[in-house]
Image (cartoon, rainbow, N blue to C red; front, side, top):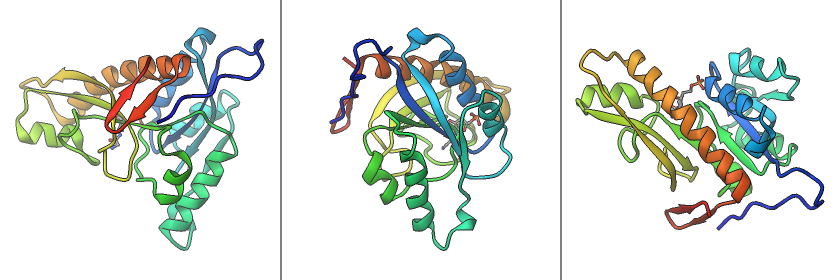
Length: 214
Ligand code: GAR
């Protein structure tokens, strides 16, 4: 169970600290950055991490003067060492919530031992269908008529954690992987911004597979 701590000083605005991890274009991160322009949203991005150099996501952060870090798996002796370093790099920024926003790596046991229960991931499919890297493509290949996005609390599986929010997106007859994914991403960003704002403002609990925002 997790309940977000409230700021200790009564005069401080209620503003949860977000660390966001990215691998690519960072449109999901951008939605969080834009939302944080309104202080009443309740959260702000305090750092952005990436698993590769020169991502547009990292640039979106540096353009705003937000601290960034890059940790490539190939720079470490083992995946486990990378995972421990990632946990350390995130911890420096004392996050209330960590958002994996198009972060194309699984976090491991070191990361989860520190941040389980407060790490969120957004996935472009309606879980438990189509976990993994190719949610939109697999939905198309399967011929589903409705797919969507899932925001969940990260556990040690692949897109298996307790579900925070989901939204449906119709599959159109002439969809390609790209057109479908782009429509999902539009809905995904709105779902993420709405849920993270409510979680930041009101706290949340995770009890078994149930996530509750009071
Ligand atoms: C999003 O659709 C996100 O759900 C997906 O990558 C996209 C990131 O876009 N993540 C996964 O598929 C992880 N399994 P962005 O780089 O423009 O934010």
